[in-house]
Image (cartoon, rainbow, N blue to C red; front, side):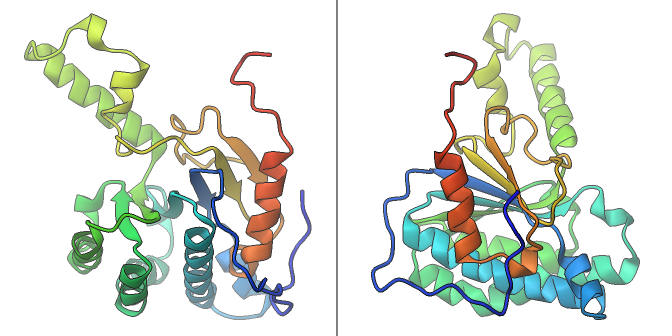
Amino acid sequence: MIPFFNRNKKPKVAEEKKSNCDIEHIAIIMDGNGRWAKQRKMPRIKGHYEGMQTVKAVTRYASDIGVKYLTLYAFSTENWSRPTDEVNYLMKLPGDFLSTFLPELIEKNVRVQTIGFIDQLPEHTRKAVLEAIEKTKNNTGLTLIFALNYGGRKEIVSAVQLIAEQYKNNEIGLSEINEQSFSDYLFTKGIPDPELMIRTSGEERLSNFLIWQASYSELVFIDTLWPDFDEKALDQCIEIYHSRHRRFGGL
C-alpha cells in the first residue's frame, strides 16, 4: 500500500502539465467519505460533499494528462440499504455536481456517460444526468463515466437475460455467443476494459464493480480516503501500474 496523503499538503503543480498518458481507461472505487467525516466529527454527508470536490479535481487532472476514460463508482445497487437521509443526499449530489461543474466539463471537451440501472433512480437525479449526457454527447476528450445504481452481478444477469430472449426468438445462435459478443450486452459496450482499477480507503475488494471488465485490470489499493485523494495520489497509482508486467496469462 502507499501511504495516507495529507489533504492539507497540496502537491505542487508543475509549470508544464503532463500529457499523452498511456493508460486509456482508469476506474476508481471512491471509498472512505464516511470515515473521512467521522475522523473529523462531522456528519457523513460532509464527507460525500468533500468527495464531490475530489471528483472535480481528479476529472480535471485525468483530462489534462490524456486519460481517455475515467469510470467512477458513485452509487452501487447495494447502497440503497444505507440510511434514508444519506441515500437522499447521494441522489441529490449528481444534480449539485453537474449544476456547478457542467460548464467546465463542456469547456474541457469532456463527455459524460453513465453505466447502471439509471431508470430506477429518482426523476430529479435521472434528469440531471441525462441532461449532462445530452449536452456533452459530441465532446471528444475524456469520457467521464459515472456508475450509478450499478452492480456487476446484476449487470451480468441482465446481459444473460437479453441473450436468452434473443436466443428464444431465434435472433442469435449458440455459436455466436462468445466473450466479445457477451461484452456487447453489458453497459460498457464500446468502452475498453480498464487497465488500472484503484480503490481508496485501505479496503481490498472489488465490491461488485466491473467484475467482468476488470478481469485483467491492474488493481491498486491505497490507504488514502477518497476526500484526501489528489493528483499526487493518482500519479503514484499510475507509477505502480507502470511498475508491473502485464502478461494476460502468458509469459
